Length: 341
Image (tube, rainbow, N blue to C red; front, side, top):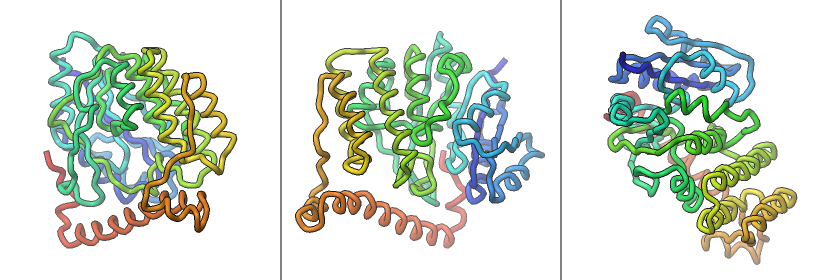
């Protein structure tokens, strides 16, 4: 019998996007599937919009607000699939995404083979997404995959993965402490439990670029900063459990340095915490360098002002581009709903 694929969609205040996400799940050319949506206590019309698809076999469950990781755990606890496809409520799957990945699994002898796919960012028009390969877009052993992720500060978007139930059980539940980067930490455990990571060319995911609404957006949230540091420390532990070479430790230090700017200088406690991790790895963190477009502000306005400018100006630009994209999508409404294969 063909494997059943569970497409699991956690949702919170996503009534603007969730219909498109569900439709992309229903449009999968892989026919043997179930779609489960967990509404995590939304205060908008998310549950109502999702429930409109109930007649097409979509299951909608509403829970009190407990966070994205809790919603994901709930979805997995009630699904029946042999394979798990995670999908955030504002992202999209290409119609043949799952089918292409299953074809690779069919040629694998291990249920602990993990499959990834291509992904690209978009705002309102999926056809404008540009797929840019990275050093993670290839077949890799688990340790090498994690080394490259940390060394180059890269990630694979949540929906890119197709995960066997056996791997999902081995990885354990999503960590409810992760108020940010919950997928980054979770998939480190999935990768650690896998035997190999296979990349599926031509299998595509569309990642909606709305930074202020995403779980991964840290902003000024102190609790998210603390959760991010916890995730970073766990990243280091996951990699070192597979490979504790000089190269892997150096990759960990580079990873800590790349993220240090989110905590320096406002949270000296978190900076000290990360510095101690770096020392244990045989390295040392230094004051983050600002890009040249903002470093000139330091003598005039101080380091913190220049850092905030570097963090916020690109966000404003991105939000402005989102408004422009929305205007263009209104002109051609087909762009919003058509997902390229």
